[in-house]
Length: 349
Image (cartoon, rainbow, N blue to C red):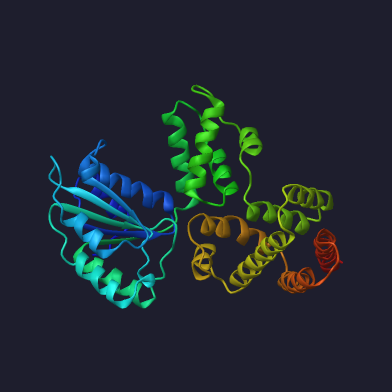
């Protein structure tokens, strides 16, 4: 059967562990967490090597079958995990053998296929067939990326558990800086906890100093500075980006993405589409969905459609120039930013 992440978590907590799982999706942190909890519920913290076998990629069907069929040692069940299995890499015979294996898992085994390094394409033939087979014989869960407010709540709880104070607003800022990734937010929270020490408080200053912004977040700040007419702030951000030795192509790509997002948000606003519905319509999930609805959409609402259309066109022209001209790449980026300021000023006359 196919279940939601909430139902999966509830079943694991209650000790209702099935024989076969396929966990994949957009939130590796949660996928790893649920896999670890299935293991713990089945074989405990100190599993014998015989009772916990880990495989990577596309294992030999004969080896996987041997692991599954061998009996657990001093336990009722054993666990076999397969990380980043990709059915599309199998030839037809291997694919058939793998489907045969998962159709008849014994009661003494729990087999968990989980993907954290790849994101399966559900529309491809062999992947679609594999998902259908697991649905028939076990549990499939596509884990969606967690939304920013929920990530912030978990960061606050993690800090509190360690005896450190982290406010919700500051946790939300942390989440935005890492681009809405639960894995990154958790890692950065651990770093901040260590810095603050038990009984300490994580401040906004700590976050700004210790947590690097993802490129997309920094470039959105650049776009915001341009839209607000703040030249000094805009060129300071450009200095920071180049000091980090970020590729000019990547800087432009992120800046073009920011303006394209704002253009899409503006069109949604003009057509009466709500921020949440617009985010879903344009395919944003988790942290990006929250950022689109709560930052991009409001920012775009204050800008003219014509201005945003010009910015998207300018980004396209700059991309061609950046990839074909012998001119210094930084000069091309700074020239593009100057032209963006000119577009804005022209619209304000």
